[in-house]
Image (cartoon, rainbow, N blue to C red):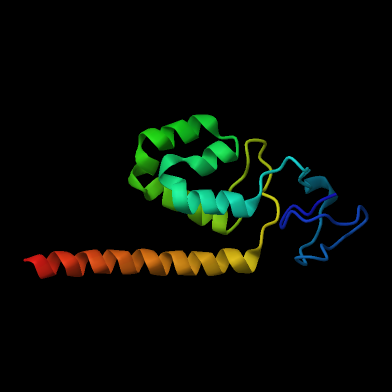
Length: 133
């Protein structure tokens, strides 16, 4: 069986996940199989092609992927929210399964770096606009 929090394989009789330390509830297990979508792939697709909905197509959300493609990721807002959800493993695939191979520390680090880069781009754009006038 697999941990419902981190998605890693654990012993069928386990009470606590040896990978993330979360309690395992046998009634609330996610059946993450080999066809589950990978967290890193979804994260990279969301960061680089989020405005086109590539991460939604990858995880099987075809209808919302098309909507995101047509709206340019909700003018970036929808894509940014999806990216945050993927960073913290709150984004599920089409079968409502968590993405496999979630790395909590990497997710938090990439979230902090991504927010920092976004703020820097915003301030550079402001300074550039002020310098022109």
